[in-house]
Length: 323
Ligand code: ACO
Image (tube, rainbow, N blue to C red; front, side, top):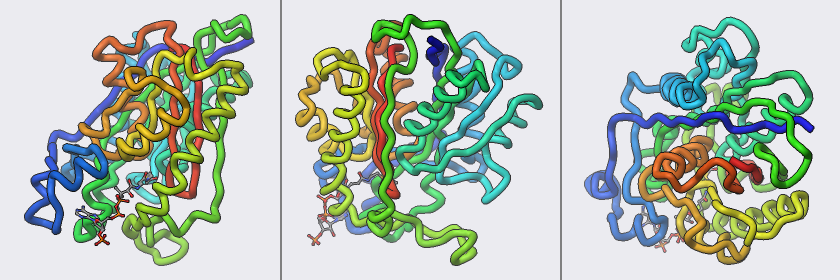
């Protein structure tokens, strides 16, 4: 059976770091409130010359470098983003061009914070279906461009950045010991649209709009949705939380991460947390967290890794893979 195996990963962050204290003169908030409620200590914010395409390109080049590949080796690029450079063409196609890649195909995937998990699950289907052999999966965001910088309940939560993986087809035995993507479970439910959305768009206001969130409402649903979709993924793979080496959740809020891990019985030392460094970078958060845990030597070849995300829509999902 064909498996989609991780060959390389990479990340890119804007140059500018904004600390919690930097908000204190802008809105009524404090470092203490932000750290206590969210675990966030800093985030990176893109300058004018740093865009979803430029950050995505840098993360893609880093991932290709770590895979020992060049753009010529890639058949497909999937970019998870909710902050494209333009309404169209797809920013994935712009990244394809920036990489000097004029073969294959590329498209954007929009599932807000769940985008990267959706994109990995989708890439796996293209690979297993024989439509692509090597896929660049990128999550890249510039949420700073859609924040209302006067709204303290949202502007302190988000950051910019990008992360990427290279997946390649490899023959596996069809067993849980195979490397590559082993199981995935995706969900969405539009009934929750008004709890987390952007109040603009090409077909409604003709503007880009700003992010609006009922944080308490999102929080209320998050842990239950996350644990449900992970339990479905465990069931599909025939494993339990104890079999995991690493849990790499979406980095929105440390309290949501802790509560989900506790409910699932995942030991604290197996949880990768980077929300303190990056804030919520939406579709970039999972690959950025992966890049930190790979770089510091925690995630190693052969480790069983669970990715999870939940975001606007609502959308939510999980992917289990052996690194
Ligand atoms: N500084 C100081 N006070 C603040 C701030 C701030 N930055 N923001 C809000 N407050 C105030 C509120 O006004 C409120 O004051 P009040 O009691 O006088 O009304 C008080 O703090 C408590 O507000 P809550 O919203 O109840 O705070 P909560 O503990 O729920 O934390 C938070 C807010 C951090 C937003 C939390 O609800 C959360 O993390 N929600 C989930 C976010 C998430 O996971 N999103 C999903 C992914 S995002 C995506 O898909 C794009």
